[in-house]
Amino acid sequence: MQTNLIDIDGVQLHTEEFGDPNGTPILLVMGSMSQGVLWPDAFVGRLVAGGRRVIRYDHRDTGRSSVFDFAARPYTWDDIKDDVLRVMDAYGLESAHLVCHSAGGLLGQYIAVEHPERVRTLTVIGSSPLGGHEGAVIMRALMGEPQPEGSLPPPTPEFVDHFRKVIASPPPASRREQIDRMIEEARVLHGTALPFDEDAERRLQERIFERARDLAAVVNHRLAAAAKPDFEPEGVLHQVKAPTLVIEGTHEPAKSGHGAIIAERIPGARLLMVDGMGHTLPPETHEELAGAILAHTAGPA
Image (cartoon, rainbow, N blue to C red; front, top):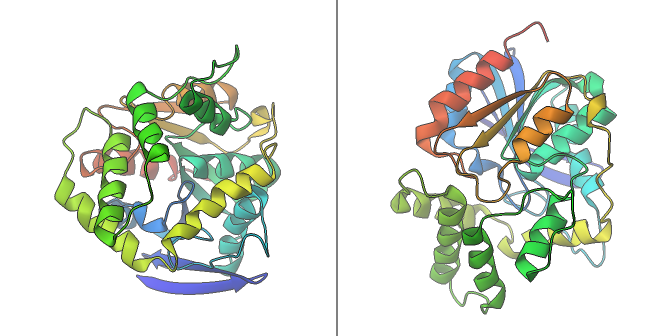
């Protein structure tokens, strides 16, 4: 593994590169408020063993990347999207295979529309269709408001109950309380079908806690969304030219059913449902996920 702190346009992004520098490039794009290490090392290792050059990175205001004073230097999700291109530019990649999770999938879809020449293939995991405004769907669910006709499917009751409790709770008073809260969130996102390894999750959340420049800075991603609520263009997914693989778990708690909508709207897209998977990437799913992605990125693209 090679680590780099790239600095483009005054934004420092912490990146990690794995595998043969001459291998087929895969750029991993994680979701909102999430560090790059949420792409599990073992999963990354499977991609590398398949001959891929794999790059993952921390979004701005997460992990070891730049922390912003949002009041002094506000930004929007357009800027977070452009950070994907900054990483590609820093590594000299005219194009790459984009593998994206959750809100990272929105970024990948948008880039595939705006810059088709830079996306060899697109893989979106546990994501929502660009233009579907899934953030508004989740917020209405948390507020107990009705969903307008045509809205995306809402999150599960377990998801809603958990985050309502979080919103009503005081901030964690200690490192232990913070990590415990992060573990409980991961438990809900994990879903109910596969065993939840609390010890492994604690090690991961301790790693996330320790490597963050400022753990609280992730809230800036919400401020960025509020700064431009119309970030997502509507009715554009038919323009995606990149071969697209859409992956969703059968026990997805946050965006259940969203994958089928993405696959329906992107011409030629293929939907893969992973049995037992929720909104995380547990070890039980790595073989199937990596195998599907290696096959998807093995073509002439």
